[in-house]
Length: 247
Image (cartoon, rainbow, N blue to C red; front, top):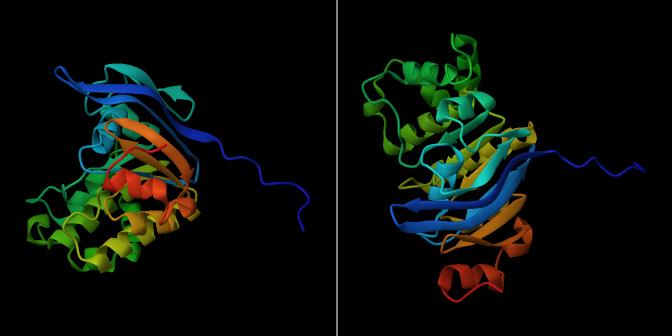
């Protein structure tokens, strides 16, 4: 038996007092969360709670009214999306966003350029091992893939960029349950290999079954943080999704 407790994992991502507005409409009000190295974190809440807006602001895709974002010890609040990706924070956007006219393999090669200016074809073998159907369709235009296959390709683009933190925004949208399970199982396996995961997902039970930590968001505020296992079937989760306020 090991007499020494495991060393605490370093904080990889920290969002503090984040405020985001579209014009005069403030949609995120002082949000705060953190993700530690190798941790699987899920951010849950009803549609319109501000989850995707939080992710987009964190990744530099939209502006911030106030607050701070730190990644791997560096302040990235004002960094460009390109610099954020090169630091190792890679977001897979909602909605099967791939380059339709390009082949599957060219889509993947674009992912290799995210952190390495010259790209790296050697990473393709690892992706094809994870997703054999991508290898079978490597020469096909991405537009000819099914919706589920396009989502797998989008996730594969994120993985091939070798992230320290992989952010998945609603990967289940419009997909069959088996495809969703596969994507989330791959995310969990990456986490076991040391990649941190931040997941926004509407399939609550699937998200909580794989996550270490859960944050609940309501009307632009993070209102609760707890171990994911503690929230399954809880009154707090019920209040967040079916009305009322978390206390």
